[in-house]
Length: 244
Image (cartoon, rainbow, N blue to C red; front, side, top):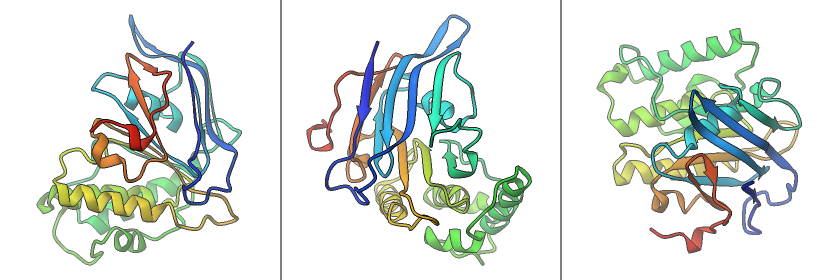
C-alpha cells in the first residue's frame, strides 16, 4: 500500500496548526476496468499548501474531486475536518480547470449568480461578490461580458467565484492552465495572500493544488507530491529538491 504523509515546513505561515485537515484511508476510485485512484492513504496538514504533480491521467483531478465530495470513492474513506466532505462542504471550495462561468454575463453577474446557488445549497457566502472581485484585482463595475476577458482575467474571476465562500480548504485543479507568465505569477501572489486571510473563529487556510507545472507552484508549496497511475509516490519531494 502506498502511503505518504504531507507535513508543513517550519517556515510555513500559521505553522502552529498541527492537526490534519484531510485524511484518505485506502481510497480507490474505479470506473469500469479503470482505476483512477488505487488504494491511496495520505494526510494533509491544516495550514499547509500541498502541490500535487503528475501527467494527465495520473489521478490528480479525481483525488481533488473525492476530497471535495463531488464524487464518492469506490472503496476507502475520506475525512475532512473530522467529518465527511458533504458534512464540511461549507468549509470547502473547489476550482476546476474549467472556468465554470457564463461568457454572456459580467464578472459581477457571474459571482452574484453563483453566490445565490451557494446559499440555496445551505451554505453562507461570507464575502460579497464585490469584495471577492477586488481581492483578485478586478473591477466589480466592469461592464464587459466575460467572453471579452483575457484568459488571466477569466482565471481570476473563477478564483473570485470560490473565494467569496470564504473557504478554509481551497482545492485548485490546474489553476495555471493556459496562463501566460505574468498571469501565472499574479495567480501565485493571489493564492499566497489568501493563506494570510484570518479565519472567523480561528483556524488556518489550507490549499491542495494540482498541476503539471512544477516551477510555477514551487513558490507556494510547503510540500510537493507526485502522482502516477492513481497512486501517490512513496517519496515526499520538498520544493527545493523538485526538478524544473
